[in-house]
Length: 261
Image 1 (cartoon, rainbow, N blue to C red):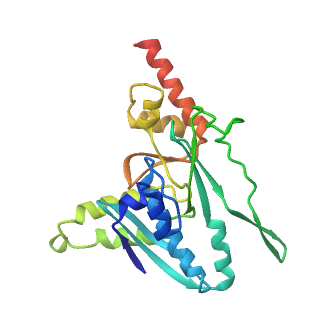
Image 2: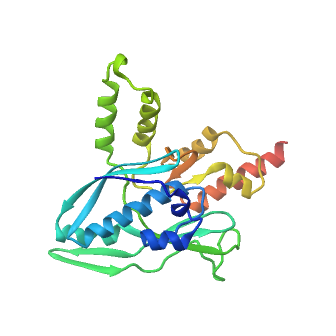
C-alpha cells in the first residue's frame, strides 16, 4: 500500500483540531514535526487496519518537499493486530526548550503462555514537581498519539539501494542522485528512536554559539550512546542518549565558550 499526504500544515501542528478530525491525533509544532507527521499518518493507517483484524508493516516512510509518502505492507492476523496498541505513544514536548518524552499507552506482559495488556504507568521524567518542564520551567504540551515503532524496514531499504545502484548510467533519471541520497540517509537512521532534536536549537536555548555538527555528535558517540541524522532534517540529532545528557553537552559547550573566548 502506498499512501501520499500533502496537507503538511495540518500534520505539522498548525491546526491541531483539523489534524484530530482527519487523523485522530493532535499535531505538534516542533523541529521534528516532519517525522512526527509521518508517525501520525502511520498510526491512522494502522488504526483503520486494526478494525478489520489487520496490521501494517512500514517498509519506507519519506518526508520530502511538501508531502509525505509511506509504503506499508498490510498483514492479516487478529491476534498480532492486538500488539498495535503497544506501538502507539503520546508525546510530551516542552514549549520552551523543546525537550521531548514519549509515553506509551499500553505495555504487553508475557508470562509463559499467558499474555496480558495493561495501561502503561505514567512516568514522564520531563515534568517537575510543579508540572512544568524539569529543564527550563516552561509549560508542557501533549500531542499524538503517534506510531512509535520503526517507520522503515532496513532490509527493504538496502534492497532498494542495491537495485538503484545497479541501474546503468544511461537509464538513470534526473532525480537519481537525490533518490540515492535520501535512501542512503534513511539506511543510516536509527530505526528504534522516534523523533529527533536540532542541535543548533539546543544551543540557541542556552544562548551559545553553535558548534560543528561533527563535534556535537562526537560528544554523544564518545559517551557510548548511538547517534544518527534524519532524512527529514539535515540538522537532526537522533539519539538514544537521555535528554538530560544532551543538555549537559550544551551547558558544557557554553561554559567552555565563555572560558576561552
